[in-house]
Image (cartoon, rainbow, N blue to C red; front, side, top):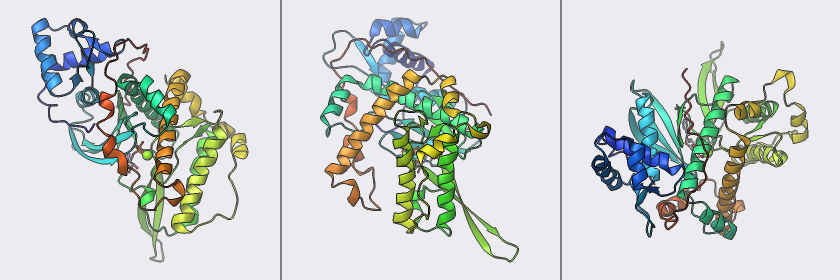
Length: 398
Ligand code: ADP
Ligand code: MG
């Protein structure tokens, strides 16, 4: 499920219309009947033009058939969804060219792209449902119920949620990459030229950086939020050198937060667990990597909870809900993320347990073997799905 842009520039306007028609049909049909594609694409040339486009799109694997389907139809593939998102970003001049992939997570691909002025940006493509669900029985059942179509829907929700949070966090002055645009399951954002904390082997003043990170967790809490995945991969560290009056060189390290699909409200049922887990991640990493142990215990959830909204802090959990990412969407996404987490944990345990986790182990090691599987897991299903998702394409103009 890699991003393959080879066919991107060869598609004609009609092909894009037909691809968009398959996407539109996907809202109510897992397998979109060819007759419906004809109707939705509204091509002047009529059915023959549509069939030509269908064959072009199918050859490029942007749409696919299903085995044993009861009628003639096509479904959108992840490749097709990628193309639609890229097309929309390129029409809005946010993405002109696509460069290399800099990150592959369990739930996303991170690509470097450039806009039409040559500025490098980051394209994050959400790919929920990518990991295979072999380990946990209940997860396999969940997967059976959730076909590619709904994983795409969940990936859209993840991108929508992440983008909404990035916007409100930036507006509130939190250090996050500038969010530029959201289309479908993707986000375009500023590229931060800084490595993740995970790659930093030594810091001049661990206590100061530790205090900054805990400070961020507490500031989020004051605004009603818990990051939910606050770890050494999701904090980028910017380094800057300044010289003091006495000619001494001082290195300052400034954290930038990323990765927000799993953010939760301080009022979440399990808020305390998420809060403690974020705090623990920072502590654990500082102890392991920098041999730094804070002198004071905490911070504790009950104290942080008292600060929610204090000093007029805007409730960002409420702000995001107001932006259109509803409670229902949040619930749906949370269930999927929960299943993914459980699966990842089970896999790690199967490999020898989290405790023995090696410092330099690549967490994504077992990714490749799983990559091509999920596209085919959904065949033979052709009943309609009830998806009431709105096509939500946000854009931040500034
Ligand atoms: P995932 O959900 O897969 O963990 P992340 O958003 O955490 O996705 O991104 C994965 C990795 O990609 C990060 O650890 C970081 O190294 C890199 N990355 C993501 N966004 C940016 C960005 N805006 N600038 C620079 N690097 C980034
Ligand atoms: Mg991450």
